[in-house]
Length: 398
Image (cartoon, rainbow, N blue to C red; front, top):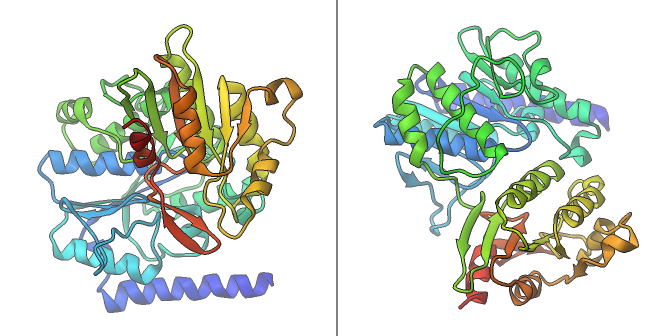
């Protein structure tokens, strides 16, 4: 089996190189491509880099989980749907890069996933810079262990040429290791350890995790030669991508937040941020689930994090895919003490779970609906049904 997998990866590398070099004339040599890898923060960093580049008058492209954009225009299918995907397959990736080159993009900012790296989807791409955000528990169903997961991420920094920059979060447990034995110019960012970039920057984004995202954006743009003061001005007003700490305040005075947090670390970070902004006496009501056909090891961890950091937790369905959503929820509540379970509700239907959160929330309380963020569907038994957390929450308050 291992031999078959290895052969598939070699074939993918061949497809990537063939697509890049022959079909599309290696468009990555015509544009400046910056890749972002890590467990959390990839979408926010890539999107902010794109937004600021556009704001400063550059022609630019974005390849992200939420959407792909070329000079302000969202890339869509013939049916009018956007075509997101953390890192596309080699042919579609090179096709997209070629379109960006043809439309005179100077910069392209893209997410680089561990799956894409392990499967050689980005082989042959000429990156001028790479950013590492952090490494926490995710995708271990695929990578088997954290060291393999790290190895996949490290593959990106190893492929960066001498002329490129490698920017790493030095405060992360794996930040220093990410810079070991690479050719690229090494730079660090962070607040807790000595770093090349450590400025506290003015921004509308909320939360400590976003302070790291904003700092990475600032550092990368400075390394690209953009004027520091111009970057700082842009950062003051730039907004996060859809589904990343999106919020509104209801007419009844409840703060309602939608976030893509779907890993233990991301959920803990966003809940700690929520704890930091709530007023005395206000309750935090969290609504979240775990995806089916994905790393089952994180389910009980996320259930515990949600229950500990919330006053009321509603465990519900996410994208169950081929799995039974009730079994997923059962795994999420494993290991919770009887005392903690007193503040946990189980409502499998996500629509009903959201309605329950709205029903019990009072003025000043905060509802966090986590896990799906920008997604506008729920996948059940291979079928995608329309479902948008923000849409559901706003309807519930009508």
